[in-house]
Image (tube, rainbow, N blue to C red; front, top):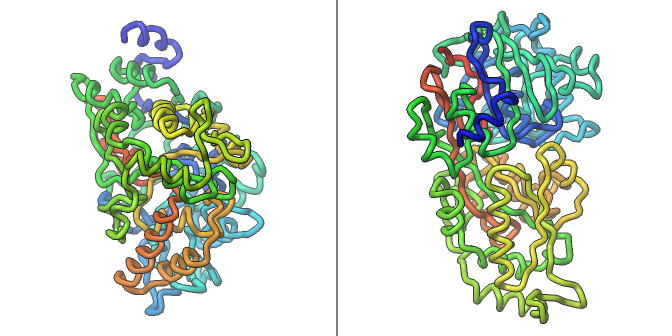
Length: 521
């Protein structure tokens, strides 16, 4: 460990000199292709976006309660279609531009423009019209009720943008610069190396969940990209960084014993690691093949051997503790290697002399994409081993995080894996399984009338019971079709130096830092 620490000392720029005393030093493992949250589903974008841009509504620490933010209050019509937001009148962008209702209307118009092709535009609901009766009121009218709207308005996707910044920077928006009303301002970005944010001195509108409403207590926030697991562990143990939420799970217990560090788990927290099947690809188009893979692995072994217990085996797509979880989905995925072999036989995939099944002269060798970071390589290799026991040759391919989305967009694979953070059953289901979400994030290419209709009914529900009913029907359907291989529900931690005060991890979209308003030395 000392050798690693020494080897990375220069790179990680340790040294709490007087000049650096007002700099908060953060470390993360993954960079992003850009930092325009409206154009991506990528969580390495989301955590940075939430630092320099704000949403109308914030998420309280409980992970389920929307609280005022840029919108200081709101009312909802009895039919659930009209939300009237009263905005703060003391907010400005980092550029100095005054925030008004026009910025809200511009941001949501941009997000939902079909030509823009925002992958998460659905988070805004099916908007009929946006109106501004005055500069600090927005009438947000929907074509149909959206039960999860306020929850979705807490997400980075729905952050408020400055039209002038978007149009001035063009294709470089979110790359060379980006404006926001958040507690931090975007200063610079060196891809795969470093993001630098500076204090927004005018900021004083922090949500009620924080004691400090602004500005932040540091002049700068420097975020280093350190992909190597061992380097991140060594850097935190050596005090080279103040905070990170990306200590490898395998090292959490070791880090907890370090005298200079605090480790806090984000609770509640819903994060599913899964492998998705592109159902339009011939190798995985048969539900029997998908089920065979789903029941041929040993999740408990993976959690124990790779995650060292810092996760829970997942046999359902949605964590049982989640809002609107369908109890009926328990028991659909039952690990059974012998049944897996039988299903593959029935599907016509016969064992070859080399131990790999084949059909019509084609080997059962699906291409599987993963991001080359954290636990993804080891879990993929472990599952590759389980697959070989039933005659399937997983061809696993790892990519750097900055190009993984582009590789997925090429559509040349049978399976892919990510860890997806969500806040409710409706959040996960609408994100992935609506046919309107094709080709991404509905990479399964799942186009099913029953699924679409019940998602629509769930979104439009005016009662909790109806919402749970319709979302439950969708869960039942997609689980029986084995569209995913759920593997485990991941724990999430923030690790910080003990001298850093006010640290509390937030669960929102893998974003434990969120705004960082209470952080201080």
